[in-house]
Amino acid sequence: MFIGHFGVGFAAKKLAPGISLAVLFIAAQFLDLLWPNLLLLGLEEVAIEPGITVVTPLDFIHYPISHSLLMVAIWAALCGLVTWMITKKQAYALVIFTCVLSHWFLDLLVHRPDLPATPWGESRFGLGFWNYAWLTIVLEAVFFFGGVYLYIRSTAAKNNFGRYGLMALILLFVVIELSNLFGPPPPDVATIAWASQFQWLFVIIAYFVDRNRVFNEVN
Image 1 (cartoon, rainbow, N blue to C red):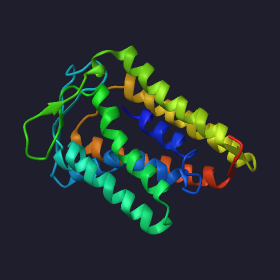
Image 2: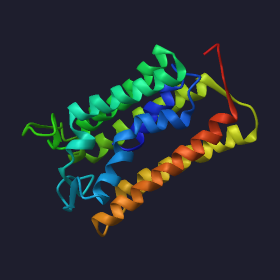
Image 3: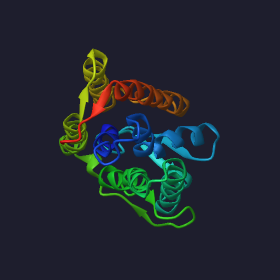
Image 4: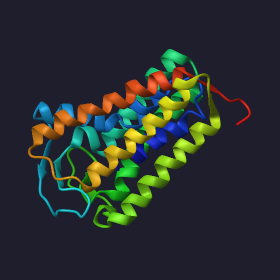
């Protein structure tokens, strides 16, 4: 799951209008923003195994800090706590908590059984939809464009940047998604880790797009 996670961030704006779309993106994609840094530090492990699933060649061997359900719940609680300390709004804290936690459950749909329940246990979970390319595409599209629809319904552009910047952001997501689905496998793990930092570009663009849009109280 990739753009589907960002769809959650888009959708969450309706429930937390006072939080920047950039922050909502960070929450929804928190685990995958953390993961490449843990790869670079040698604390988690992935291998490139073309054919291991139809959609992705990545074999997620060891990622208990970023993707075990227990740690995800802890990360979600910490992010929610920080949100509450800053905003003093329980509703906003709950939105951030849910965005972070949602990542594991969306991954559950597509991953093969490699998602750990705890950092130390042997239990692994995953429904394996990555073995069905068109099902994966449909799932990503539903979550992403559903979230985009809710965001557009909940906000209005203040100027051309708010309008066309959003269109450019959506197009960029689609291009990267198609590249991930149909492009060649990465050459090595270091490339995966460094290329994953590109996700921060989405966060930066989202910040400026959201600043140039206004929340629509009616919707």
